[in-house]
Length: 149
Image 1: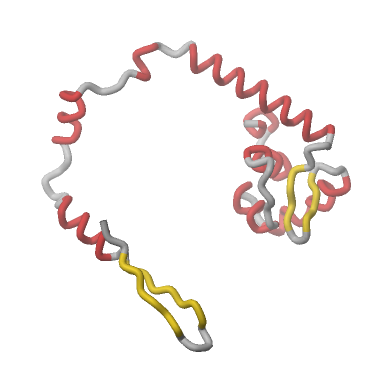
Image 2: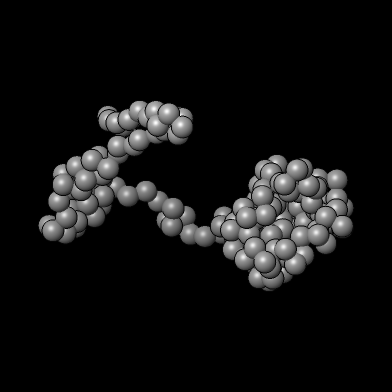
């Protein structure tokens, strides 16, 4: 939510992503992918985040520094944005969240094109639920697992 206000800058994207999972430890690759930035872009500023104590490093992983005044301020901003969004949602017309009646649901489901063979589709999905796991590559020991209902 913070990036909605402060913009789509890579640093803001990383902070926004990390605040969504504040107790999770991330590798650099996870941070880059989750923040939708490149790893090389992250490498340009992650040391600054450590220097300003926005993040803590645990081995090769990074975690939000809950003691950081900056992070506390970002959490406060995020909380205010969430409250604003909740208020906006509560002002929406009540009928926007109504559930469909059984007749309306039947009408929608009956609009499924005839070309879709649901039984065939279900069979294709079930036939792909076959996995091979290898527990010891040196002995080439493996076992098969068939997922069934």
